Image (cartoon, rainbow, N blue to C red; front, side):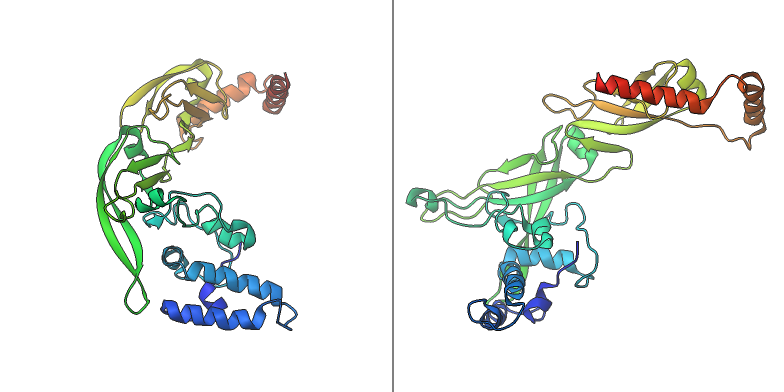
Length: 328
């Protein structure tokens, strides 16, 4: 995916005021609108102009885009990092794919899940404050055990001159134990202000989990690698596994375990409702042959088993057996 410089598309500076962005858009719209333009690529250019204006005319999208786009150039290969929009407070209750189909893959990746702002319908409902939403990034350890923490959110605003500013507010939030990625935490009354004495809207915090050095998350399941010594894998063993909360779990490894095999420990994933599982991918780690003691052991095994044990044949048989089991 290529990075798009929306400021370059509209021909405005990054610090341009809202009125300057609107004037630039109108000028380009008169030039490239397919109904009046003689330019051969008018339709494509008009789509690019509309996309850029969609982002830069919206203070919330513009602020998130500005934060993401620092140091990037138009046309360069670009992948937004996980949680790139975390910490920004957006109007509207969540995401549903508004506008995404009309614009580029770059726009869809960044804003395709963001719900367009708008009224809720009837007059009575419109008096209540609008719900807001934001993403927060949690450490796996905090999601595992639950925590009381402070969350700082940046809300974009336009000053008296139409220039973009960020206002920051800090909230005290209780994170429940076992919260999953994508789960929403509702903070009542922390959204937009109500009108005419009506209650404020709510703030919905969407949880994302930061990458962890040892564990990956698949829903509520924890996935990790479990290194084993050759004798532990061959003879079977009970080995310790450290969980995200610091507790040590004893796991029984069956005799004859092979690298790549998955070992499931039920109910030891995220402590949600229901709890997830702990999925351990086994990896046999060989002692270095540079150690004379290990080398002697390898040489003895080669002498006693070398003529009978064909590792390639055994691996091929195991792969065939696995394929048959998967098909049955």
